[in-house]
Image 1: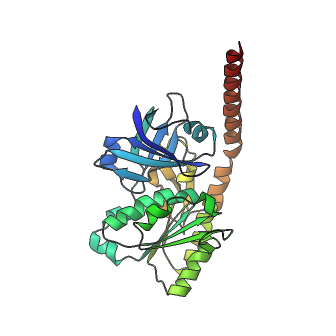
Image 2: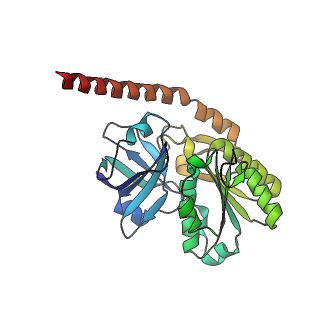
Image 3: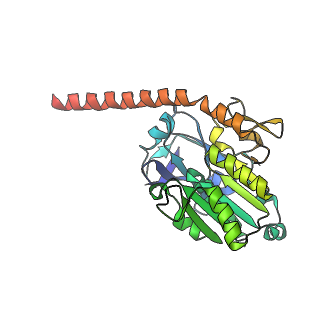
Length: 296
């Protein structure tokens, strides 16, 4: 059992948990993920690590409620426990294998879309600890769903925020923002890391390909089992079949077949919807039973 030392709602649909997991905190690196289960019979959910504290022995995860499994997790509060918390899994960011001298030669821009801000923060914080300043673009549909702004300000060299509706920061999507800052500030980047919704990563990779900027993307959104056995995260990278959970989750964004990956991702939408409806019916039945019992 893994104790939750902090539970916080970041917005209406995004939740943060800081969890006591000292063995994982001791060995994990940016880019890796954990698999969690709320209860013994709960769904296995792979989640990219948002932050870690080796001294405290804690791991921070940030979750958006999409399906039944993540919706059920929102009942967990400070002092509660996860039944399973397994990791670190997957491969660390390629930056972790570079020397400090090599890192300082890079001029990196991170692009974070929505929930992708959480795993981007982990990498940016690590780069900051190595003495490397990087630029960060955070994109969101609207100001209300923006997360980790203040935390990112503390570790990013320059932070650019853009919203689709113009309610905060710049107006437009992340690719518009990238092109604008390159033109306005004469930026020259040697590498880009884009993490967020699949469609965002696809168009970010298309934009950086035109700009000649090598780009890394994280395919954690298509992982299910997290061990390479289920095959759900199979994707094509440079004409070769890869598995996001064991070969990644990070890949060359210019080589990923995003159209194929998005089709695969869509295959599970119907099942997720059914599971969510079943969970809501179960909760409604439980609440009705409680009310009926109280009326006797």
